Length: 261
Image (cartoon, rainbow, N blue to C red; front, side, top):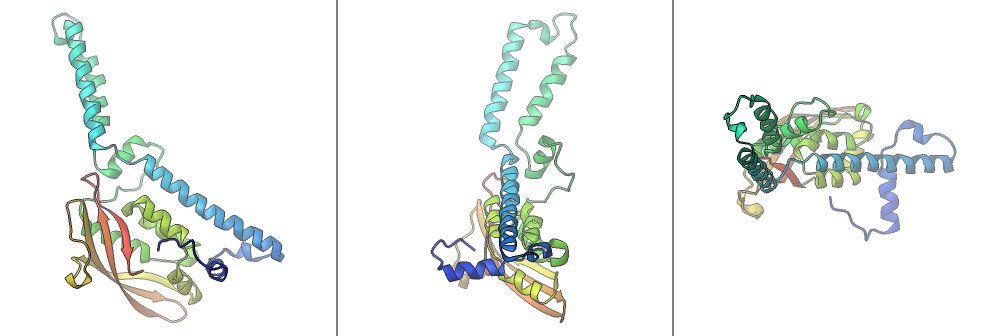
């Protein structure tokens, strides 16, 4: 779903016509409708960009930086004991206050697992349960299940399922999906449908697909999802997608690319 800056004016008009707008945007005179649509698109992009920036800001600390910080803290501890021998228990001053203040500092700077660090470093964030990013198959299934589960009357626009799947996706992929048009969403809206994933399975990609081989930092998974749509007419769909996942930090897999949408 990469952006294409070489589209013709007619193609851009088709994209704008396919955008799903709230009812209040479709009222008023033509100039007012155009102004309201432009404001709606700008607000959708702003929300997505703000979410991506927040996710990047809350990314867990890199292992190398954590090691440097821990080494500095340990060095300060050794220097303090050399300058003040009383910290070793040689005098009558209690040392409990020193150990109580130094231990949390090391724990806070220690690299951890994705969302757990996010929850502790951002007390203002919502208390949603942390996503399990330890296994690529689970991450691929969770991301696609959330992305294909859609309820247009409740979601409002196609960015809602993107943000639901965002905890399992890389920020760049979230921004790309949210800022691009989604023909599948438009089709679902036109049929008055609500989509629910009934079964989903992730596994190795068949060799005939000729995708890059798996490495410790990047793997490919084929995800097969069956979706039931309830609307003006009920029907079932099957999606077969190739999903790329990366693990640059060594402790959290995230979806970075989806082929077959």
